[in-house]
Image 1 (cartoon, one colour):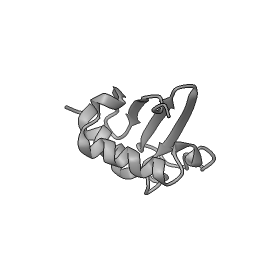
Image 2: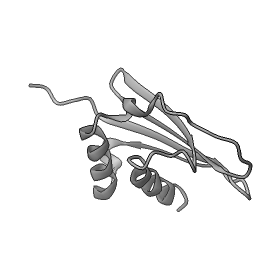
Image 3: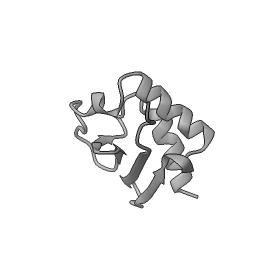
Length: 103
């Protein structure tokens, strides 16, 4: 049995009161243990694809917007959420990526 294709993540945070764009791209091998655990939890609960049809933003100015793309081989899922519609299941990973991107 072959191992799955490695995961590639692309993350961006934009907007906010004092707009500053944070970006980060990571391959699976570059994930910290905590980030890898958050990814495993998402994948074990149905994967990134299950969030693709959710409402991504609502009314409001000065909110952060999060863009997350998860690609494994030919499968790719691009997600966009504002800070109030970020699914609770994605929040731990987004917080970890945001912290890492702001270093």
